[in-house]
Length: 334
Image (cartoon, rainbow, N blue to C red; front, side, top):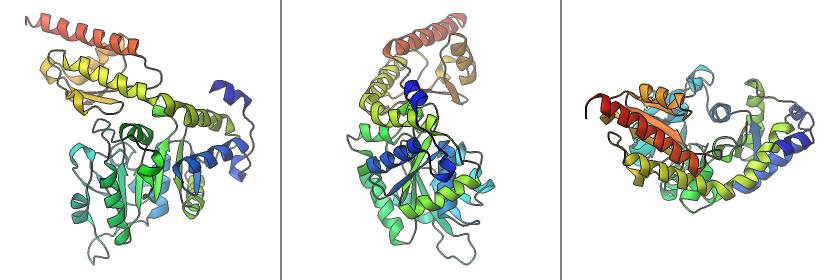
């Protein structure tokens, strides 16, 4: 990636003149079998651009209550796009039309109109869960029948495709727009993509500029994205294997609760209440030993496997966790 970045041919992308960005956008559209694509600095900007493109201020966006666009994007759909989230709890983060339909307001006299439905695949907070293709397509079909668009936060859609033994094009065919990350699982240092119809991307290009995402000689970043797009999906299975190995190892540590069978991609979320310590305390202890993780609740920790984490690193993380937990148990006289 760094060699590709150093050798990248560049131009002014604000004017559409960066050849490396243009190649990346064309390749992303080709892989997803969409008409066009747009390079954006971050996945959060990509989601926001899509929401702004599809909606009008005062409308609602239907999503899972734990969706990334609702929980981790600083209320940008409200702050910037002028929309309100209309949420419900979805088991394992997987919405169905049965859950969505009661949330819809279509030209109701006293309620804000529904402007967009947004799904997330894989679902971050639900531990990397994956939408069954038939469920997602049913939502798209029913949404289109009532005149609604469906956006996919597909930050880790390549992980979902691997888990389902499918292609990203097949999984996203019926969505009106898709955001996916070149960073995260694909390993690029920066960048995400929006894909969709040519008309959608033309409008999205305008809002990218409005939100400050117009970049100049950005081919140096697009070059890394091209490497990520072409090369990393070939080895993404290692991340899933490592995540399952991590989950199975954690399940054997006293005081930790996790269903390893539900770990199907690269996100591992586990409960540590049985250790007698708060998640934030354990995360701090892990960090002292150079094992990085995130507290996801009072007693919940999240770990993610990726291109820079190998099997030896997983085993070391498990050894450190066992040491910390067993040391605490010893202090309590267990």
